[in-house]
Length: 68
Image (cartoon, rainbow, N blue to C red; front, side, top):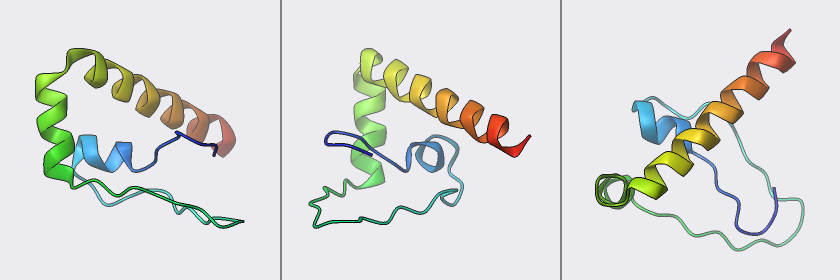
């Protein structure tokens, strides 16, 4: 991951437990946002909703391809 990246989007969208683990290899600053705040943003901002769904679809496709 690089600056500005995010994780946890799939669990946020489908309400499941997270499907990935993230470990920083060097000192890192992260911003944790409450799920309720993100859900509110998803309802109010169509462009953000579409971008988050595209990211989730991309990540799921990558998981499927790596699984064989």
